[in-house]
Image (cartoon, rainbow, N blue to C red; front, side, top):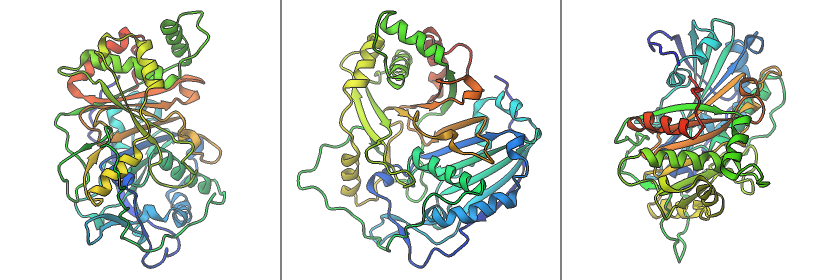
Length: 438
């Protein structure tokens, strides 16, 4: 890991806004569902790195021309939030545009990737929604040009719009237009209706275990943490995964442990070993819901469930934890979250990621589907802003150019005071070999 001062690493900042090439229409609104509003204090930050061959000729004008076309389809991303008379937020699709940021960096991409991973925040805006809703963009782009001729595209995505699958579809669609392809879908303008409160069930479900109600944040959509959070990432190669399978199951075991449950079980045990006070026996699991999701549609469609251990997690065998995660996850709590939000008339504030220790499966997200002139990114980083104090673990696909086929990247967001101890436990469990991503 190479430490570097943040001062002047990224400079020459230029700001502008980009909207759709044609007027969306009058009184067009997007009404977030209850689950969308429950996610409004969270944000996704993605950074895509492209080499000089891909970046050649990709000027600001060409990128903006593609955005003019794509934003006619993704018009919701150009809107601004308002509140109805009841206080429920809705998105007015008024073509105010996405924020566009240009920047320069005197490092090469290889040099940048050798720096501390916390510096990725310089390549994707950390702006949040508020305190003035009608001035706050919900999507921000940042294009940074490197000394080597390469570039990065940073995406700042408000989770209230949709999950990582939706964010990936959005930017991959822009890539299609930049490659001179026709958009894969057409706009579907919503009818103006700001009264979208759903009827509460006659027999309401039990309160969801996966979310935490927080004090009202008003129009400044971020939940303050009680402690400072830190992020670190590391790759897990296909060879490592095979070795871990053998270590846990034995050499003659024919069944294979799902990769997500394998990695989560080991990290859960490591965190429980280090955490002071009560161990994290209740965890939240977020996964893709292939049955509910339509490609190209925005919204939060991922499943959200919980798993609870009956014993001290630090004393459990990893194989027991794997079975617990794989077989005893609760039913999807999305309906219960919707009911909790509607019970509060859509105005309550919740934390999902980090309400409990949260494991997020992004293995199926097409992060490397963004192509520029036929070239895929050499590296993709994604993170979540707004994680609660219990922390979160994200599992992402690894780029084949970086770590070979079949690998994964793990991103861990924890209270700063736990990071050193958790890294030590990860090394003991053969997950971390000094190969932490910088």
